[in-house]
Amino acid sequence: MGIHIVTIYSQINKEGGMRAQMRLAMMTGTPYQGAVSVADTNETLKRFYMAYRHITGKDYPDKKEGI
Image 1 (tube, rainbow, N blue to C red):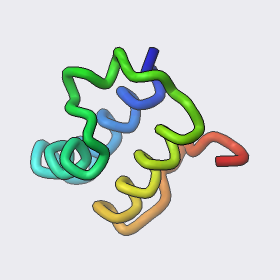
Image 2: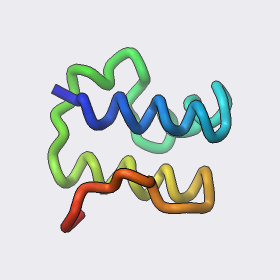
Image 3: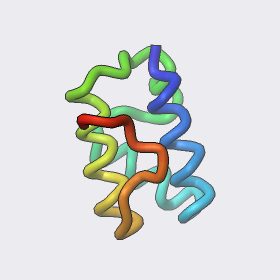
């Protein structure tokens, strides 16, 4: 279950609104509606962290250790 991914969507919405959420969906290939069903694997989280950094210009604040 993509609890962490949903949290990333929530945080990016705070940072840049709906436009940033849409960019995150395009860059990761995972729409917001499907985020809950995606597993929080290291590979998936890396993809989201990289997209978050690209969109906001900063690291995700609650980044899991070792990823």
